[in-house]
Image (cartoon, rainbow, N blue to C red):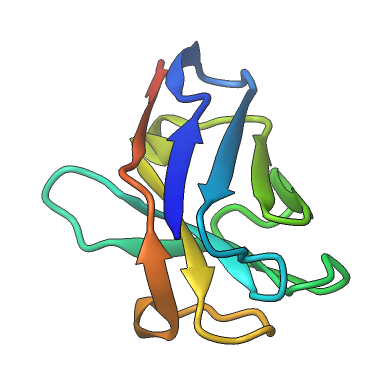
Length: 121
């Protein structure tokens, strides 16, 4: 499976961005998927996850209520609203080992290359 993330960019605090992630190759439509991010000098952290059907989602406390994860089979989205400076990071999409949601990176098998999100004050 190959993942291609897009949609990152520069936005002012309070603004919105929508990230997309397209999966190609062996289908990932039966697997959970997720978004992680890594800011400069920090560890990669969980952002949001969604199960195989899209019926179950999970969010990090820091983005709950501001970000919305969704999917259309093997395509993954992250709607980011009310962005904050601290949301600045490289965002990665990933395909999980199983069908359920997962909040920890070891439970993900395939990773995209990342897309930069920069939020200015």
